Length: 388
Image (cartoon, rainbow, N blue to C red; front, side, top):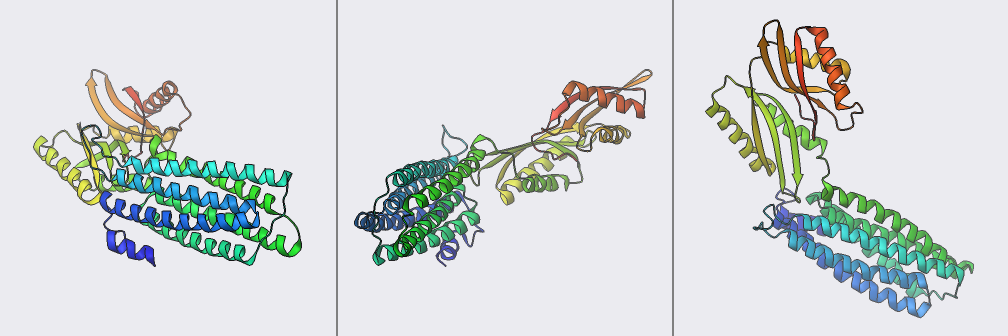
């Protein structure tokens, strides 16, 4: 298959995906799409004008817009591959997301225009003269679009590209749209029933639904989508694999385009450890993330003093309230007849208890374990739950 050849040539079958190789794959897909869609546009427009079928002409305009989408995709990949500069220190990777959003909006525009054409055709139907040439052109168009759908979907999944996945969805929509036009043409020819307008409306509604779904998906990374659970778990495992790391929390991941992940996290280590040794461990972890995961990781150290089992008491106390709660940054201050405990209580973002009420609940729960404990609690609504 062509997709396998492209992946092997540029990305070593998807194992060497860099901003540069992504750009090469994306630009090749864009050029191929432009050529195919312009040829389909010319062929469909010709037979549509000859036969008088508005659905065929609308389908031809759809292919013309698809070529415009391919142009957007081409330049999106080209601009996304540009290196970082003074004004954009995190690179230009989000151009790819913007191109995917633009393609999704173009799909919506086409859906609206097709809907208008279909309604007009239903209100004022005209005679449609479908020929075998028309049917042949539509059949070839379906096969070409089916190829582009499979081709772009395969590339999009291999290099994790929203732009190519949006392009593949657009080609899939075209397969459905042209198939509907072809079915209408066959029925109209042999059953003497004019379904041209109705098929156009049905296709338009499907395209609008698909475009709306794609817009939501392409907006997510631009608005700051939460990191995938698999990524969070992978980061957690790698950090906690070091025996000197007692816990991790406050993970934040920022996506500036594929291959441009920046993250920060707090890790806890014993305050008794040598500070130079801790610094060396942190440096090694950061380098490992950059080398093997392509993540620019920044780690903040929280030194933890020996708490004589206080942490386990706190964990048990908060779990009595809700299994999703956890604690970190535990500090123990001894006084005459009392023990003051300063810590953060981590609650999930969708936790429906207010911070004030949660503090009261946790304090009461802790006192059931030891009445001398006085709690100073900060509620932490975590960005990504990596707490040990």
